[in-house]
Image 1 (cartoon, rainbow, N blue to C red):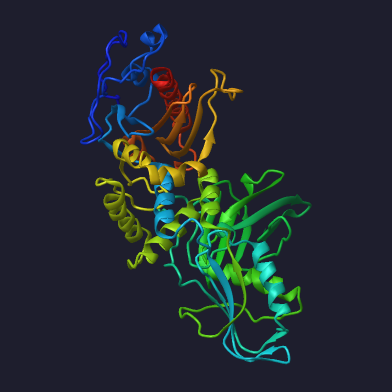
Image 2: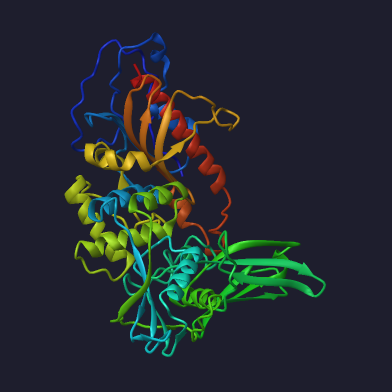
Length: 496
């Protein structure tokens, strides 16, 4: 598929300043850049269309760059074209969550007793109640088990129940992803370790020894809610079935080699969290029955709880590591806090689209989730730059964005580069995005958004090829190269 961009001549010197209005209707062609006074070197900066043509990218490219303070758009190309934003979506989700929940918001996970505690015996049920914390881990559950003992509980006469109804149950973030990829797990109001289970294998004299656990930096509790068997085959590498609320995996012996480990997704998150807590409680002498999922929020007395870090810190981690489950959980929590019914990721994303139109002026935002994993989402570069340029939004978002390092022609990080970039990356097969802020070599500040996508190549992918499709890595490398060349162009043009 050809790019479809007409070649334009190199910029022939900027002897006259061109004044552009603030963004209204985004242009489909590149605007003539607004130069700043500077050296003659700026006269030979290549036109953006020339950079796009020279990138060798198939598909479409769209971008917009604006002055940080005024929001005045300095240059745009196909900026009104909606393209898949991939994980750049998480920057918008961060703004949404900060606006609705507040930077200091914390999520609480609670152990509730439905009966009274007498002589160390809880007469009713013990319920592990999720509060939508996307960062709950094994260490936190271990601390809660210790708190339960400190509260005087030594025995539980009733059932051990697990409740995740604070958020809707979602089997997988993107149904089009392979079953075994850990970045598309199930979602619930009670989620543990990003809803991943650790699978490790070692070759032995009898074949392979395998283990499934919920490891952290302190603990490695084995789990029974996920099981795996090695099968004598080469392909497929993994198969999955849900049997009796247990994640049942098989793995091809031909794919294992000498040994290794990886994370697999969890599809029964409440039972997984209950399974791990049961083991941790037993270490404190508290014997619990097998966990059972309940659909009803319990009425009882809190016996122990765990509070998450502040939302600002959670979002910083989300933007740095691009954790999909965090984006989906905080996005749905924000929608719920607005009083909008949440039945699915799509319904919550629709609510965020409405918020983006009302609060950011992004009237064409069409997102299908909060993480960007769904390839059907569409965002316009021009609208996103307008949102990034808003003073209140950038004051919240910019400090928690990741520092993006520029690289030389060999791919090595440029040391002591005078150009600083804080942004969110986005990558899917044949989709690449980058949006955020640039500090030019002279201190000039810019907001920008760049999207590239070959949607035809994405549609042509077979399900079995989606994890490592042919040509996707090369395409992505070209897209990242174009992103850097555009940033370098803007630094030269708009840095004094």
